[in-house]
Image (tube, rainbow, N blue to C red; front, side):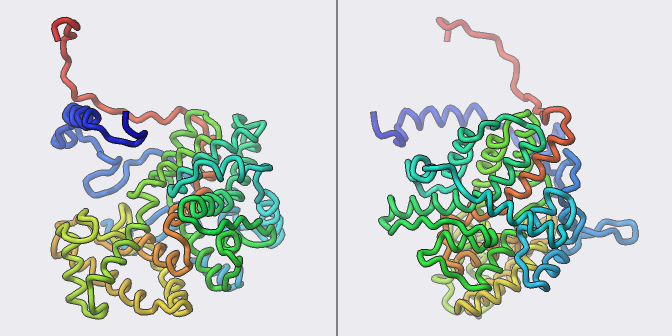
Length: 452
């Protein structure tokens, strides 16, 4: 018997058998009008529920026709760009305010925000010896798996873990929102120490600081950071906090919640969904793609050389040979992703502070040229624009965040949206979510064992 993770010839043979018996003719999806991926031929999602938490708009009505338009994102009816302008104008951090809005449906006044922020700060602590007994054991580079393990283990410390009353679920969600930065950073520190031989730093959180500030405080050996660094990270958290009920991880959270299960199981399910490279892991792909691009493109200001590399990406001749330009295109947005629009200005400021202006120039060139190249090379049903992942990975790189934390940062933010959707699902509790699948297998006669 080989090692635990070995793939033996026997397993390979079984895998081939599995593939041959499980392939479904793609023509059957059209024949039975099956919306593969719960999306129609135009990429529009199949309506599966109602929500008041957030809304995505990507088109407008004009002369009785629906035409693609610049994307807009609303949290509880408020345009995200207006929310951001508000707290930036006042010089405040915005994530805690957005969490309050998503959970309770209203923008907090000064006293409500102070009380809420104080409550989150008080919850920002882990059970005694949790770091030693759970996080430090069996550490690995996959921090998302470590997060899922920690969340499920936290349930063992909760005497009301399975109580799905609204007040108890709200308490659980607030505690998880508060401790997710600790679970993420401590899990990375354990991995870096035990697997990369780095010094081990376990800083305590500061109750008086924002979530963004605490992330940088916990991560950095000297716990120092600039105001702009914290603002950029806070902005990333705000923009990732929620994105409609139809995204994969939020839908997963609602599906699992509808079964009546506990908060820890529902959030762990959301984490496992977000971990996927087609969802929360996309920004890592963008950064790695640009790492190769910076080596292959010698003149970062030469449009033709950049376009040549982009064509190689589409022809599966560069990077991971997937045929994709990572960070370009979105399942919903066509002309522009409002999150990328907003974030870009803050990323530019950070690039000047950190000395990455040339790299930022390359990013903006790719953002400008990629839609043109894609239109020339591929038949597409809608426009293509940069999505939020296009700039978020670059921002995290400039902040010195290790790539292992890119998706966990996404999770820290999105837990706010998951919590709001879990509560909304429970408050409007109905039937368990159970979509239909049509079997296309032919009926067969059973063959006795001796005759096979």
